[in-house]
Amino acid sequence: MTIADQFSAELKDAMRSGDKPRLDTVRMIISEILVAKTAPGFTGQVDDDLYLAVIAAQVKKDQKSIEEYRALGERGEPMVAKYEAEVAYLSQWLPTRLDEEATAELVAATIAELGVEGDPKAAGRVIGQIMKNHRDEVDGGLVNKVVRQALEG
Image (cartoon, rainbow, N blue to C red; front, side, top):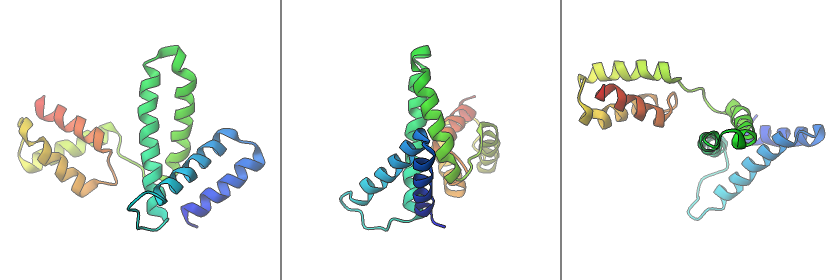
């Protein structure tokens, strides 16, 4: 079953059950797919890869929003809960990523492999090596942060 088929089934199920948060999230992704499909220069097909790219982009936006609403304190709590629910729901379609601890271990191993311990100028090289070999396993922003901390500290 393709992701498009899964979203179609999720849409129908959410409408039947009256699950408004899930319904809103599914509709949002379907809308983003239509936007991507009609964007100038789009020549691909609406397939699982497009769905995964749109879902990943939405999760990234939601995570940024969570941070911003958390900074508001108590006033932002309802929106934090909304975005956290969206991230949790959409994450079922995304490949699992390494957490910060596992990312730090990967970074340490790559730094040792390249022999660039304590050289902050080698950050781009380390990040490039990790992203080349582990793109689907890691979060690029987290890799960047951990590499810079490891090489400076």
